[in-house]
Length: 263
Image 1 (spheres, rainbow, N blue to C red):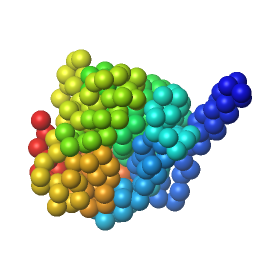
Image 2: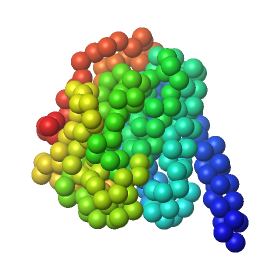
Image 3: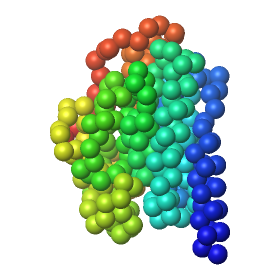
Image 4: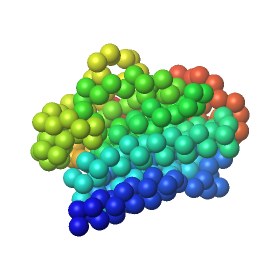
């Protein structure tokens, strides 16, 4: 019986790893890959789509399918997040080959932040993304993102909140997405890799976020008003707008989000 269960799990992992997002007509204007959390509790990329669209984003928002159950604890431990990251890396490479010069960004929520980071770690030489946004991250707060940063042209923005009860309670019991038990996730206290980098920007929750529906809870960061007011600033830049017009990307200064002072 146990062997049969393992076989089913293995099959699910293979199927999950093979389901990369397709490129739609908006892909020619750039793409943002959204990696939802564990347990299928958040295929709600609707907030990300609506928020970015309201902010003027013309590119595609592609949701990354990586979970295999409706139980976050199972997805947290099976290892399918790493398989999802590997598949996403291949998808990013395919996109870059098909749409050279266009903007590519990643947004990850909860365990999906591990998928995003592992995708970066698995990118082949010569491939990269522009910016990465981590929300309610269940990665260990000391996770070493040095390898991931080699594939990021801009920065990794990590939004964190001490009000996040999921990270304060259940996650410490079941472990971080990278397998550390009893310690804080980056979404609770900030991301502090062994070797500090000014390209890792921690943004602490503050009361001003409440105006946009973000009260510091685990999934508040993907509410459409907050995405429009804050996250879009990391996705839509002058370089992105030029890419949407088909012009060559250039290194341009980052736009600072309203409020949300980096640590």
